[in-house]
Amino acid sequence: MARPIITLTTDYGTGDHLVGVLKGVILGINPEATVVDITHGVLAHDVLDGTLAISQAFKYFPPKTIHVVVVDPGVGTARRPILVAGDQHYFVGPDNGVFSSIYDQSEALHVWNIVSEHYFRQPVSPTFHGRDIFAPVAAWLSKSWQPSSFGEPIQDFVRFGIPKPKTSGNIVKGIILRVDHFGNLMTNMTPAELPFVSTPGAKFVIRAGNGQVSKIVTTFAGGAAGEPVGLIGSSGYLEIAVNKASAARTLGVARGAEVTVEMG
Image (cartoon, rainbow, N blue to C red; front, side, top):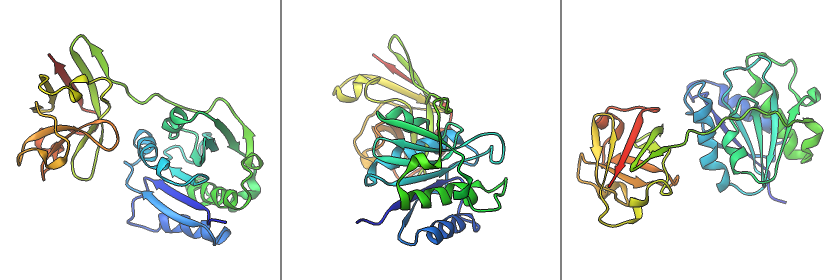
């Protein structure tokens, strides 16, 4: 039987002991588990950034992978800890909308409010549920595979809509969803809203910050040095990049900035 896989996605950073503690708790309960870091660089307290991060990664793991996602500005408050079964994967984390993108992508969906405290690490710290609730629940789940034993089924779990672009005539308005490590700008626009992407010779202008883009390429190296270009990235969204430079710095924009595409 394959070793169970548990992934970790958090906003903890890697400058202190927090991530290591989660791994220690998991392996203390199930030494057979394989623990994989997806990222600990989610923007601090940013639930939207967290749901985008896990939505881009989870599908590349084998079925029955358990994903622990801790972006939890409400830790210790009345917000609920939850266990989610979505199609072929499991998710453990806070009920604050961090799994919204998972809900959107799942056909079969079951959610439980985790209330079975005998699975928790005691005593439970009101400021470290990653250690005392989420990590141990994931570890025990990887041994029993009985999600219903952890709590009560719920339907009123928190979810929010990922921002969508708006089209008016020949103009599409969107936003920057993420700025990656290289300074590439991932928008919330897909080829479905941008027919010019697959139409050679089509005219368009993409405006963001203090610059504009009028060239679509297929690779990051497709533009001249210092030239902002557009491309459909591996995420499936329109991205703005600058060859061997940061588009965020070049255009003077950050996450949440407006992007306007004018076609015609």
